Length: 418
Image (cartoon, rainbow, N blue to C red; front, side, top):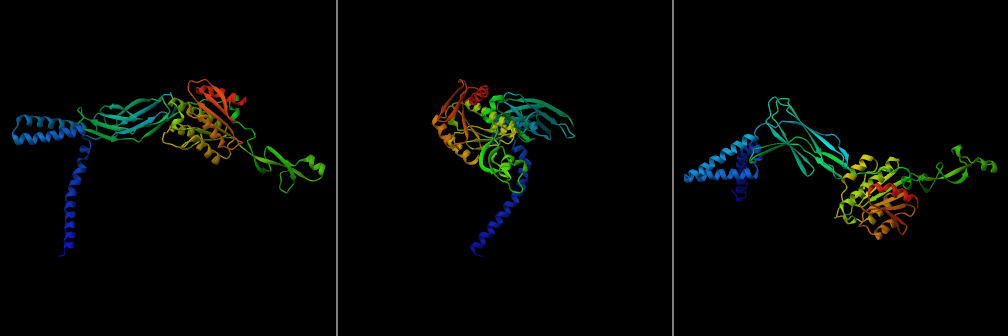
């Protein structure tokens, strides 16, 4: 027998031996996993101390050490009794409203039911809410019994709050063992930014009755361009009868195609563009107010941030995306880069609004405005909480300084007076 054959047979025999050992050991680990996975670090320390006390006490016949070993063993067995038992709860986590505005009350309901034919021992239901967690004690439930808890979720700031998953927890008073079972999935609570409706003359800047005129010719529109000879198939409603009567030949009107007014809002999410969190929250509220007004009037709206585009096709989708928006210090994208992207991708934009903080210098605003087509109306809304409302120009760009969201309608009216 060669050495290679011998090594191969030895490895195969070792694998068979390990397999015979792993089979029973694997079943033991599976059976013991509910207990071993429930032991806390403090519980492992007590267990190791108890084993060491038993060994030392029996080996050295130390009565005092044996007393400690017995005491620790009794404590561990008592802790085990607290976590044993079935945790077959039927739990329903219900949020009364999944979308609220900052400051509104958000209420949740936790419904716990015993669907089994046996009583369930008392336990604790933990409900993670954002970075925190709420704990609700559940009493002993009879077969078919229910327990209900009502809780509120703080909505002091704009964000998306994950609620859940609900966990059933059993533990002993000393914290040696802790058994958890996940019972529900995570639910999301959207806390939308505060917005301000724009009505009356405040919306004049966002409106464009005839849209943007293009160089494409059309047989029907609202922007008259020229007259041309009649071609079979032309709509007789567009025949220019005065010229036809004068020349004796059918002549029809030709129009320039126009496009619906489209608003593009460029919200800076660069951390250095804002002096405080309050500035950014005001900017998000201003962005949401402009976008919602365009959606309300059934006009196209596109919202761009430094990291991409938000959904502006629906009111709720826009607010949901704004609830997730956060500033980032890692991005190298500046306002001018976002404006360049807007000029390349939003070709039908008739109005562009920059929404920024006090950290954006006039030179940056001028550079961003230069990246946009010349036939687009551009305005910058600089959000500085506590400052008085003002208006000034940077080159041909109009800059409005807002100290609060309530000043937005008045600022837009002043913009229309230019």
